[in-house]
Image (tube, rainbow, N blue to C red; front, side, top):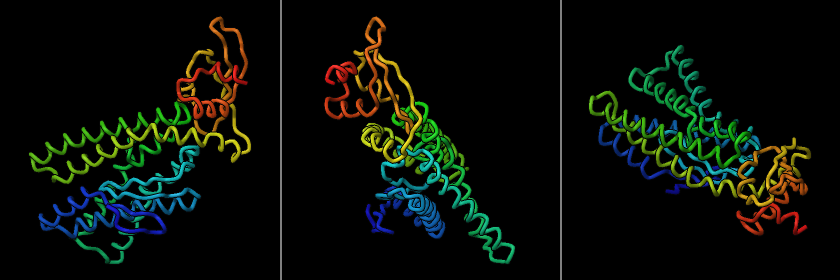
Length: 292
């Protein structure tokens, strides 16, 4: 649900989040629900501010109970360092609030009813979000680190699957906790949020991959110089088998051989990407040399 714009960015609240606030109202602890809302929003605004400071375009933000999901410009997919910096900003903001609260306590500014809850929520947002599973911040860091080895698409799928596993485990533990009175129903709801968002990230992986490929040609122009990565492939291999190996911040050169392993020539990453958008994923690599 779109609720407005902030710094030129569309701000959305997930309807299930509003349902969670309703549960806090029914339980008579709406002030705690509003505190969670404020801290989650602060966490997400920290991501947004960090992105803008390092020149990453933020398109829109969806606020969820465990943080949020921000759609950002394609530069994130070709510069893993920026994704790591933006992801770390959220947990860092919660740790900053914890330090601020402890400092205020030394000056007598403390509520025995709400301050411990304030610390608890900030700790949960900081450390839960650092789990290496999408859509959590730790998952984005994990994906960025993994993408330079296996490519962006595969890294996204791995991190999203880990997110689904984490969500199912937390949901099961939450149900047990509810039955035995250890935790509230909100833990189960948050786990369902993570499952929903992880599944969404997994389904969007192919689109992220295509966007990444579309910007690969710009990567060299922007950087000026990039380290080269050499690949060897048979001429009958389709483009899709090669492009999935493309990793950020490297320029790929493909040495083509025939079935007898004789060298046919070399093609560049730029030629492969052009052929992919012109002829499709199943176009054979050897046809690029023949067409030239």
